[in-house]
Length: 200
Image 1 (cartoon, rainbow, N blue to C red):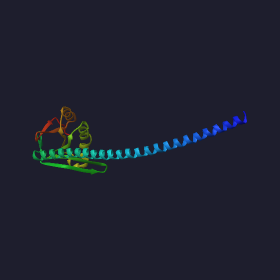
Image 2: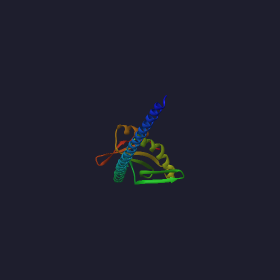
Image 3: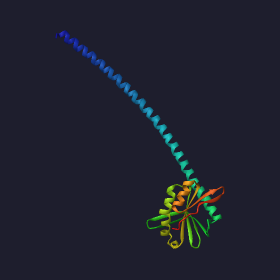
Image 4: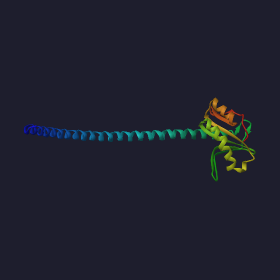
């Protein structure tokens, strides 16, 4: 390789390096611009997500409020109806209690409605729409807890009842299977859907 060839090579390398530096500057500027645009877009997306999150929180609050309102309507309806006509089938009651609660050591429970006479009582679990586990919890937890929380009633005949604004054949079957009354609405009145009950 001659001196001239070497000079040409060094000159071409210098031009290539200058082009490379220029290309690097251009790429850096493009990346900087893209990063700036991405940051701006991220801010807009974050703002949209915040708005959607706020709307979801409002919808969630409204749905929760509606569910609570339905439950309150159900409790109010069944409580007032049972106060007006305190009987289930052939059982007549002198007292109707609402939101009866108790606590003994680690056992805590609250009862939506309790009907009471001289020797029997009915624990009524009220739901806007009862489900299978409503019947199970009544029989397996609420009724046994009642005599722990209120030992004065251990000698009473204790019955269970589920009061549900919505009723269907499956609920009637659940009531029969668990040996509890099923109370539902019929127009503005109560309708007793199951009278095949067990004394607990």
